[in-house]
Structure formats: structure tokens, C-alpha cells
Image 1 (cartoon, helix red, strand yellow):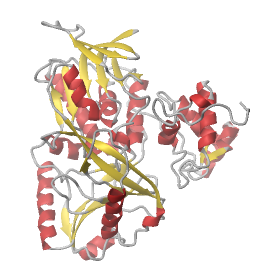
Image 2 (cartoon, helix red, strand yellow):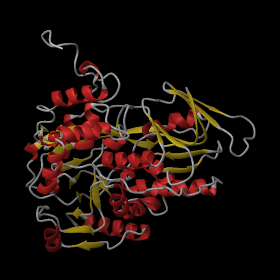
Image 3 (cartoon, rainbow, N blue to C red):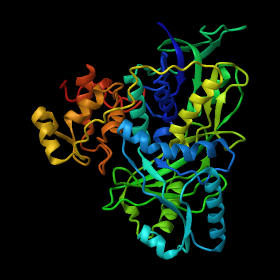
Image 4 (tube, rainbow, N blue to C red):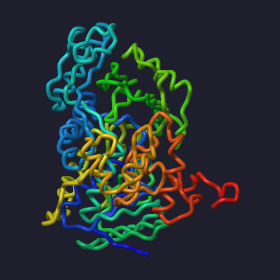
Length: 487
């Protein structure tokens, strides 16, 4: 099967989904082509979800140009798309005069990058802002605009809104080859043909937002040659706290923001992230890395109970070898190919502004963008039973008794909420897909009690045998055949 579109976006991470949502307002046929079977299965799910304010990137870099703007846009995006976002502010803690000099440099960077209301504060203000911050901290860079999100929730919300506005999502379609039309291509003609196991995708314009696979897409299209470095990071998640911590940073290094302690939109504490160059695809957690995280976290928050760890995981940042910057723009080699590559940290924070910048780049390249009369920027968030007021809980149960059947006890997720996560467009097709949409399995038992019930619901809703239900991507089966002769 071959399908033809005006624009094909390769990659359904937070960058690709944000770009799809940005461009869905225009009268164009658009598809998002994703190698895996769901949204945000790469770098977008393996980070701490911090919406960095933009004081860290060197002024003049592409990162600097999109980070502060992306942070600014999050308030509007969260309101329109219905995802959780908390703008708590943050502090970079300093412990001596040398640290204070670094903080002043960060403040100057931030002012140059357009970050508002930055100030260097002393011990009294530090503990007024975050009482649990280390008493040894002598100074801090206070930044009111920092916040945090669930990055996969942002990506899912953006793509759901894009699909509601006509964008096509093609899953399980890794790009195996790209054919580029030779000679002069007339306006409106197909330039690219993407070969995938799900069929060929033809398009006039191609956007490369493939994360850690961006170099391969660029190479297949005959465009810029670059190499990706797998800068791996381990992350630790702690159980929910009575009060959500403000993001606390150490003084950064040239390659990393260091070990950061932050709250999350659901009340957990996250310690993020180490930075080590490892073999591509390595998502193993390492004892040395986890110990470094716990040690670094205790320096920032001495009373942090690190025995409350519920999960440790790892992922790779999509870093372009030889540069620490983003690559956003039209290819200088292949007209009609647009690159959004090297989107490492602060990629989550920058995503709305990267999408905005990609729109501008395409306009400047001559792509005609005419707004649709029926464009709807609003995505109604699904009901979150755990967070709903009592009156809404009663209303939901009255409408469907399955809202009263709790499947995940740790996160109070009922059967009806799981069903809704599967039936949404695009919906969950795996256990982890359900988990990312409604948190079934994210609690302290980490699916110990609810996984078998989630598998049964998926099998029923997808019309398949439980042995065909996947944990996550292709090949990750959980069940093998009947148990004790019972089907």
C-alpha cells in the first residue's frame, strides 16, 4: 500500500508530535511515521520532564533561541492540550564563592537568552523558597519560570490534537529506505518516497524528527552526514511525597546540568540524570550511576529518603557528534528536507518553540501554509479518576459502573479509564502504552498487582489473545499460551 501526503514527519517523539500539532492548523495532508508501535518510546520517555527556563545554553546557539521561548509557551500549550504542567520555579544551589561566580554567569546567560526574573539569592531566601534544600547552600540562582511535565503526556496530547485535526499516524513503520526524486522538482510534485514495512509513504516535504535515528534518516535521504552519540542517562523515581519538591540543580558542567532533584506533576520525586557515552541503544541501569544519583541528590536535599525508590531506568540523549547544539532548518543538500536533529536536553522544554521555528523555516523555504477554517487547537483531557473531585467520580460511576472497578490500586485507575486510553485516537496498544496514558502500573508496586488485569482488558479491547498482548514494542510478549489448560 502506498499513501501520499504533503508532509511526512519521521518520529513520534515530543519533537515530531509538537511539529505535527503546529502544522495541523494548515490546509495540508500530514502524516507522522513512527518506527515503534506508539508515541514517545525513545528519548521522550526517558527523561525527568523538566521544563528548563533557558539560562543554561550559550547565548547565540539554537538551543538558546528556542529554550526560553518554549518554556514561555508551555502555559498556553498546557491550557489548550489539557496536559499537566506546574511552573514551580527552580534553584541552582551553590556552596562556595566559586559556585557563586558560576551562578552569576548563568544569570547573565539567562538575561541574554530572554529568561525573566533571574536573581542570585542567599541562605534565608533559599530556605523560604524550598525548606528542604541543603542548609550548606550559601547562594542560589532563583528562576521563577522553571516547571515540569510528563514528557510522554505532552507528546501524546500534541499528537491526539494533531490527529483530531486530520493528521495520520502510521505506527510500526521504521523507514528502511528513502528515494528522492532526481532533477528539478516542480512545485506540488512528490519529492520523497519512504519505504516502510507498513507500506510506502510519498510526500512533497519531509521533516526528520527521528531522535537518535536522525542521522540514519539524513543519510538515507542523501542529505547532511553526521553521527549521533548515545549520551546515556540513568534516572531514579521515588514514591510520592507529601509535598512536591521544587527542582533543585547543582552548578552545571560543560556537558551536563548535573544530578537534579525535582518533583513531578503526580507528586513523585525524580533524580535525574547521569551522563555517560555508551554503546548506542544501551538502556541498562548501572549501580555506579544510581549511586551517583543518590549521592548527588542527598547533597541537594539531605533529608531525601532514598529508600523510597520505586523505579530506575535509562535512556539516550540524541546528541550530534562534535556539537552540543540543536540542528533545526532546511537541509543545505536536499531541498524539501527539513531537519530537527540533535534534540537533546533541553528538548522537552524547547518542543513548542521548535515546532514554531520549524513552521517559520518552512515558510521561509516557500512552503505555502494556509490556515484551515476548521482548525481546533483544543484537546479535551481524558478523565483522571484519581484526581477528579468526588462529585465527578460519582457522575462517572453512574454513567458506567466500570469507573468504579479499580484495577490499579496504587494510582487509583479504574477499568473504564484504561478502556478510554485504548480507545482514544491514537490509543494504547500495549501495557506500557496504557501506563503512559493513565498511570496504571506507575505506583509503588510497579504493576505487581494490576498487570494481569491490564493484559486482559487489552486483549478484550484489541480483539486478540492475551498471549499476543505486548509489554511495549514488537516482540515483548508477557504471556505464552494457556495456564493449567485454561484459556
